[in-house]
Length: 371
Ligand SMILES: C[S@@+](CC[C@H](N)C(=O)[O-])C[C@H]1O[C@@H](n2cnc3c(N)ncnc32)[C@H](O)[C@@H]1O
Image (tube, rainbow, N blue to C red; front, side):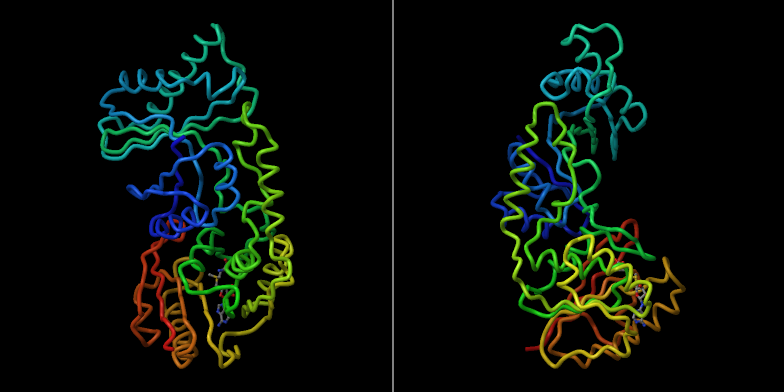
């Protein structure tokens, strides 16, 4: 089957690398990552990919200029091989730069075509019961080209299932994991997350360091498909448990000025099963003692828009600069929507990368260590 991994803009290279490391040959096209696989691969990628949002099966693609054409193309798909008689059918639509653009019409016409086909094949004139497992179909149109996907994931993969409490402005787990994978950090190096909030960066680093599959604590839609044996996911999860590095010793330091945040991050770390792998401390940035070795610092400061005013964000940028510019053996990475960050930090970044934290446009400012 042709599969597609949906990822946030700016993260494609990270997800591509993850897929290559899992043994696939991904192709990036228009912000989507395509690769081939069967249901075992669907189980494996849902379980192991840290940076992506979801994995979907590409059911069809075609050119479409009218609703009649849309109906016919959707009707042509062998829905009886995909959706059982009692399947709950959910259709979502998106349209960009296309002749047909009314999402509610694309949605309802696609659903009509699916139901008509199933009624014909299953010899049903009445309504289909839709009381069984969910089959989420996504119809995506761009420049009059449609792709039809079957979602295998369900809730986005950023929902790992370990988060107990949120904090004020938490990063999504897949963005936090991507931020780590964009650095040169490995499990032998120290990592500092000095504005840890609910602990997402530190927790994701601990999961990476101990080789814990990010999806181990959650379920996926495909696991409920009528024709998928639930042993498939169970076997993959058992295999993933076997490769956890239970003896790993990590140097991950998570601190925050707010004691309440430290308690929240500790609860989340407990939820993720890696509490013992992170050193937590309530500490203001100015009091942080950074050892005279080399390592990686990742900071997600409050951003103006979400937590305070931009003046405050500039003051924090200044404080971060005063503290970290002298530490030349450490690589520093800061994600912020304050695009003038370098000016207040006091130094030009080695590199920056445009990323989105949800809907917020940010830059990931990178200040590499001098060795
Ligand atoms: C945007 S939040 C971090 C969110 C976090 N990445 C998460 O996923 O939950 C910023 C955090 O910086 C902390 N903070 C603000 N000023 C600080 C300072 N001077 N020293 C240490 N922490 C600070 C806040 O308490 C807040 O928890």
